[in-house]
Amino acid sequence: MERPFDLSGKKAVVTGASRGLGQYMGRALARAGADLVITALPQEMEPLAAFQREIEAIGRRALALPLDVRHLDSIMQMVETAIREWKRIDILVNNAGCNVRKPALDVTWDDWNLVLDTNLRGTFFVSQAVARHMIPNRYGRIINIGSVTCVAGYAGLGPYGASRGGTKQLTMSLADDWGPHGITVNCLAPGWFKTAQNEVLYQDQEWVDYICDRIPLKRPGHPRDLDGAVVFLASDASEYITGQTLLVDGGISTGATRAMPKGE
Image (cartoon, rainbow, N blue to C red; front, top):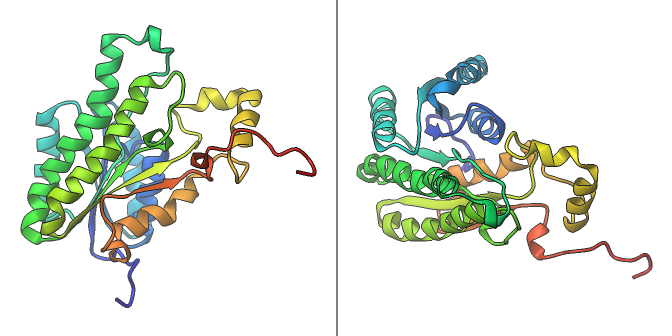
C-alpha cells in the first residue's frame, strides 16, 4: 500500500454539504483526490452550486443533487442519479443532520420526529441505499457523522443525544452486517465545533469559557481538525477498522469538568 491516504479515482457522496462541516469534509476528500456527489435540501441548492464550482476549480468533478433524508423517495432518487452519473459509489459521508435545542420538558412530538428522522432514520436509509451498490463491488467506506453526544449527555439535547447515541450503535450493527462484503462502517464524532446550528452559543463568552475549561486542549474544534480523520476513514489506510467511533473532540470526552488549580 504505497499511498494509503490517496483517494484518486474514488467517488464520494457527502450529504448535507450546503454549508458548515459538510463542506469542509468534502474539500478534504476532494484534495485527497475524490470526485464528489454533494447534496442538500432542495431549498439549499444555490449555496450547493457555489460549492460545486469550488470543487471543480481544484480539478475534481462534482455533482450537486437535492436530498431530503426524511423521505425515502428523495434518498432513492439521489442514489440512482449518482450511480447513473458516476457508475459507482466508493465512499459515503452521512453528514446531513439537524438539532432542536430545548429543555426536555419543552420538546414536542414534532421536535423529536424531526431530529430522529433526520439524524438516525435518514442515516440508516441513505446507508442502505448506497450499500446496495457497494456490495456487488465488494468495497465501500461509510462514515456516519455523530458527535461527542454519542458518548456523553448534555442538558437541552435530549432528541439530539438520542439520535447520536443511536448513530453509534447503528454504526456497529451495519459494520457487522456489511463487513463480509468489504464495506467498513465507522462513526466520526466531532466535539464542540462552531457551526450554523450552534452559532448562537458562541456569542455567549461565558459559555465559551466554560466549555473550553472542560476541553483538555482548551479550545473548540476548527473545521480543519476533521480533515485527517475523514480522509483516514475514507481511505485504504483504515481498511481493517470498522464499527468504531472516532472522537475528534479535543479530549472533552475524558470527562474533565474544571481547570486544575495553580500548583496542583
